[in-house]
Length: 595
Ligand SMILES: *[C@@H]1O[C@H](CO)[C@@H](O)[C@H](O)[C@H]1NC(C)=O
Ligand SMILES: *[C@@H]1O[C@H](CO)[C@@H](O)[C@H](O)[C@H]1NC(C)=O
Ligand SMILES: *[C@@H]1O[C@H](CO)[C@@H](O)[C@H](O)[C@H]1NC(C)=O
Ligand SMILES: *[C@@H]1O[C@H](CO)[C@@H](O)[C@H](O)[C@H]1NC(C)=O
Ligand SMILES: *[C@@H]1O[C@H](CO)[C@@H](O)[C@H](O)[C@H]1NC(C)=O
Ligand SMILES: *[C@@H]1O[C@H](CO)[C@@H](O)[C@H](O)[C@H]1NC(C)=O
Ligand SMILES: *[C@@H]1O[C@H](CO)[C@@H](O)[C@H](O)[C@H]1NC(C)=O
Image (tube, rainbow, N blue to C red):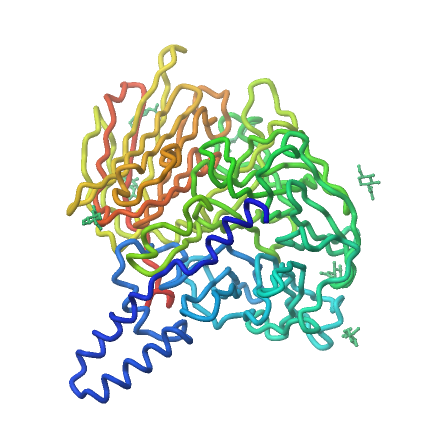
């Protein structure tokens, strides 16, 4: 068993106590007639252990939980694992599947594919389990729409859905790649030929997490799949028979013990900086032109070994793909989708138009502690997904002109405008800032800061903006600070005081840091030196975006009393600079997940 396997193995053990049962009993005790109580206990226990996903009482119970995010995807109870099989269908409905384990006491925990749908990527509606555990459990994988019936499963339809995933035999303890198909648009699946593994010459046992895309130029399906510290690429014309095409290795990672998981290869558009050509343009993205240069990015996650903090990390490699081979622009290993500790196994949606920005969701957790965060024993759930992000490639701004190794991923939140609600504070900082803003923790908030400067000379300057999230009823706090410099910005966040009873053995995991973040384009125009900062705070998850999305960071925290105040602080702002800060409610989602 490899090391990543071991940590999964640990997660597979029941990690959520059955403390819900007494609570359900006490609920029933409030009902006067004893036989009704008894019946209620029986029904509630059955529903809880058998099919709580359709039952409202458990949602109500879960809703009181302090750490449950309001805006981000979570489950009311149980274990939410990595997102899988993300796709958008022809009716513009987003589908997310996720590794899901019931906490039923027996038999062995067994991972299913849970399923939820949304029209806006924020309001999710839970669906019945899509792929059920039988003697096999269904691990990570992906979903495609087989519009041309290449598989032969869909004689009369254009919207046939195929899931390709790794399956694990619970008693034989073997692993292989499997397929299930859905004729009802992805709601219910039939496992192909009794869990028959896919036909290839590949050593399927050591591989996992197949991600499939359609490559229209060659009219072939393409699968990328992780195998220790390499990614193998296969092609197929029918989704069933797969031919080995090539292998992607990064010379600087092949010696690593930190195995890959969740590979994703997707085409991605580039934003060219019209702003750099015309300096009077404001550097908004996508104010630049969105162009298709035939770029791809390959993502891979590792359970540990992050150069940032030692934990889980998701890297990306920009490059080209010709139908069989992925050619990265270089061998760099320091490009990360997120600089925080809590964004593992990001996945991209299938079904978006060619040339459109990619859209992703990640698992806002870290395999070094995902199975032991305190919400499990306290509130009966574990696991959050990141907010949806749309991504492009950009050239890092460089006064010397751009070359391909400057390419980097730009990821920003999707559709925030539509969520903006009541404004708690709108501050134009005249001198120094020192102000507390209260909010209720039954909502998510958005903090936006803009800093514009025109210094008299070229001397470097630094202006800090501190954000201290505090609790009106407790001591815990989350300390964050963004430092706007002349040419680069820094960001740091420390959660060691926001999770008092949740002590990490590795203190470096409590830090989230991004240094030397380049500005939003254009860089070399002194007339528009400006910095942008956004933070989305949602009870136990904070996502920050620096300079529109040049860098994104995700950190979770599990305070024992709700964080409901943000204290904003800066030192004196020079006369040649302007700082504005807004704090605003984000519309709490109106979904069924937590009801
Ligand atoms: C779909 O494929 C199956 C199996 O190859 C075939 O029998 C059927 O005619 C096909 N339907 C269409 C519309 O192509
Ligand atoms: C379906 O067929 C059309 C027409 O041949 C082709 O352009 C398209 O790429 C195919 N798509 C898939 C997913 O098979
Ligand atoms: C630069 O952009 C501004 C604002 O969009 C526009 O008015 C101006 O004509 C542009 N200049 C050139 C040289 O393209
Ligand atoms: C794709 O790239 C590989 C490696 O560069 C090359 O060997 C192969 O011939 C290319 N295939 C096509 C169709 O261009
Ligand atoms: C904050 O105030 C400025 C100036 O009055 C206004 O333009 C801006 O729209 C306000 N922002 C929000 C979020 O209300
Ligand atoms: C700051 O705001 C003032 C008043 O709106 C404006 O005159 C000035 O140009 C701004 N400074 C910068 C650097 O944008
Ligand atoms: C930490 O845990 C102890 C023992 O479980 C409990 O008494 C204490 O109140 C907790 N403190 C906080 C801040 O949650």
